[in-house]
Image (cartoon, rainbow, N blue to C red; front, side, top):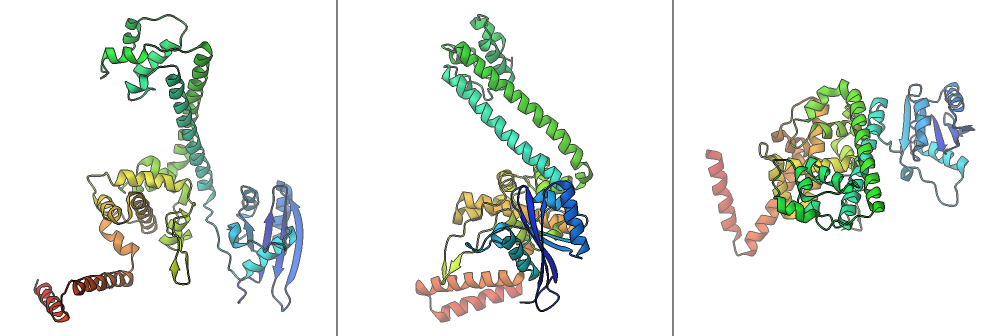
Length: 429
């Protein structure tokens, strides 16, 4: 194999220290320089200076949790080629592993350029990604707390969720506050808390509340849960302000992506925080969709095709894209994705169809950010599928159709005559 990088450095990253091995392959026998550094900032700067002194501008390390990030931050603006690799691409052989051997193995693989790099966005987008992912966690926590709140009411024989669409709405919240208070109340007090435009009848509201039996301990627990919900909502609002502040320089990209059916402002911010605005970092749409976990895997051996399920990648981006896909197929003003969904769901089922629509939306975003063109559904099929592949696909369908016609008794002569007649009709149009 040809050596692509004569001077490389392989790093085995740990929480407290890193082991770095520089491999110099400028002669017949490679030369290895090994050093160990702590992960404190001053020692990482010493490591960076050591690389620069040895004229090593090609560095490869494993993406071990969050431990690689301080190393990457120190090297980012000083080393030209930094590769953060998924551990599966640089995994050593069992029984031949230790810290020194791991670093040396990474360097040996990287000098031949056979280590695939993970996608690491720019620092602004890395910070934005931290904010959006933290918001995702807080929203999930708030949803869990709301479920606990509602379950606690149900345990106390309070059935307000059967009357009100939103238990956390104004009318329902006022009634719950009255129930949780230690003051006695009457039916008139409960009905006085209901908004005038409430659709539920007074009798249903009273029936849902009558029989409520909550002990003081249960009331205290509900109040604790409610306070936590309010605190989470307040933190989410603070996060939204921080996100708006960071996304301000990229408002044009946000409005640009909102042209895609189903994409809201929040969804566009999530997409940008995950993939950035520079699509040259991905060599093709397949690399991007594979990174997002929306591409079927390739698993074939001995001529047999095994499971081709999508991967578990894109744990933050994929759920939002599927959510966008659900909105896109319901958009009546732009039925492009709805028509695609109907065709795919008939063959593959609704779950796979939603994944396919999510992939198409991500592909559209890729080409829009890459070329600066507006969303145009007429061009999507041509962009996604090369002409040669479409010709092959049509030929395969034609073979299947011809076989079905021959099976039902049509002769070759009749089939040839039919093709000639249709060709003449198309030529005259």
